Length: 73
Image (cartoon, rainbow, N blue to C red; front, side, top):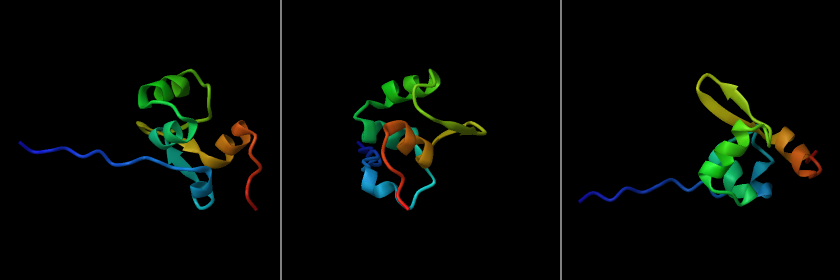
């Protein structure tokens, strides 16, 4: 039987410095949420997201502002 492996979406605030956007799954990891809870929070507008076609992204600058974290210069 084939074993399926899931890509890791683990991320920390330090990993955001060179990223413009992250996935909802990466935001979930950063916020300590499960995937479903993160998509539900995104659907409700509880954290910043942008849609491009069918894909949903989290803009890093908006997320850092939402978290109250100073943006890196």
